[in-house]
Length: 341
View 1 (tube, rainbow, N blue to C red):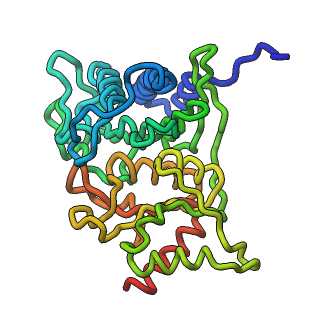
View 2 (cartoon, helix red, strand yellow; view 1 turned 180 degrees about the vertical axis):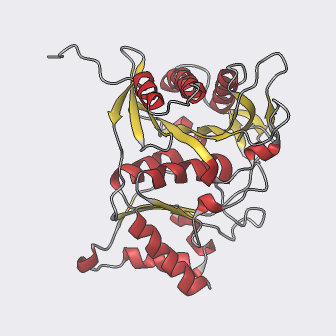
View 3 (cartoon, one colour; view 1 turned 90 degrees about the vertical axis):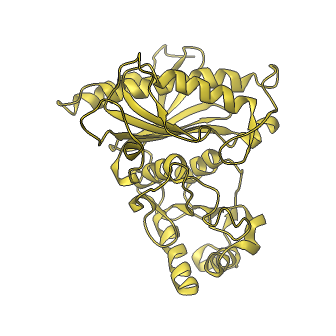
């Protein structure tokens, strides 16, 4: 029988964190509450997608050359509407939009910029697999104008002030960090609130699971192929072979890795000459996930070093990505250094 108690809400958690920083203005708290509100709207539509006419393709391609799905458009519209009038942002970037997104003149500008993937894993929508939203928040660095510029968006992951994702699955969860630990909040639809369900997430030092699309195996570098062969070999002393777990939705795969440990991989490959660095985008996929993994005690790498140290040069720049338990990431880097030079 329920005790009638309500757990710590996201809003309460944010206000408690804000009190730890006397100089805080409350802008970041407002931003994260806006993200939570938009996530509730998207979650509602995702949960009834099979009943509403919101499945399938629009017949268009996005800037990435990918088929746009109806829910992609809906999610992008919802998050842009949540962000462009709240007075906290000076500029935005979305996976679905080619260039930087300016804040309309009639709305106030703020001290932050955001890059986001409104609906990661959208190719899985029609088959009812977990999908998600990813976001990365930076402080504005340009001066002399309230308007933001592309330079405000093209900051390294090391300059992030907050990042997170929302996963729409068996439940809807918001996982986020403002640099003070990684915390997970599950949406309770009966009260319409995100309640803290996973405080202070810590990734295990080593895991026995690897997550990668092995259909691309022939196109990987020798070092990555050697590493995958290594983790599939039987060796009871080191707990090998590892288990393979691959959903094909980055949010879902990283979420499992964050909670259970192991290694998520999306290597560079030679399959598509137009995408030599793989598929994942640095600003709004790799960096925010790396931020969360590192703040949970894990590691995130290009295979040759920390991914968050990269200085971006393009909004939709791609990068190879390996993230998870620190010992697993370190072992992968050793294979890359040994075989790929």
